[in-house]
Length: 306
Image (cartoon, rainbow, N blue to C red; front, top):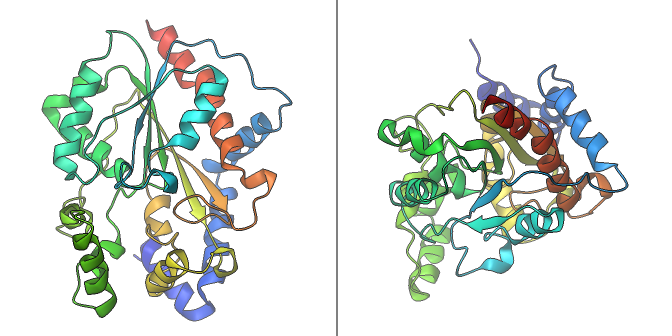
């Protein structure tokens, strides 16, 4: 049986990467699982004013790699933080190591969750590599109870199954060698990339095991070539093109194969940076709508279960 990844790879080779990306996007939007969710988020986004925030939930941001060294990239989650604060939702950043391994950061996340007041609901919001840290924490049977108060997880362009870009960055290719040299000269450790290798037998080659009470919402960028700004984003997207639709880091077939609900952000790359920002792809408006959706659903159910 042909997997979604194989189907998209073959389609990209036959009809081009943009055609494959458009086909996969339509499949998500028209899905009986994701379609109604996407419509509901868009309805909330069109409200003139956000609904009043009534929960005492804590939004805990699990940042991306290099979030301390390069916060301007958005790796520190400041966009998400700003949206939550405007809604009146308390926010904290989980103090994971900026270039830590997934096991090291999983332990930090587990300790953070255990330190929260008993019974206080938590929403996790992870960015890029932060998703790998969360997935690794969830895979630890001894730490499952740390997630008892986690009502939902917002996964923003998460590297849940690894990324072929990690394989390339660790390769002997000239560009990869120069890239590693650049980071070495700036005393930035790339050892964590070994955890992000993609494929069978790698660190992240394990199922995402979610507790029954935890709602997962993923957001993935679906860019065409014309949406990508010149530079690293376009180069990374081009390198992954033989593998099918991608956001410059994550293969979109992988993103579509995760449990939970998926919002495909048309025109955005791995950093959720649409070249031509339009209201329907405004990341701030989207995040606000997702948080309000969770306040109306996952948090409501958690309150009712108590």
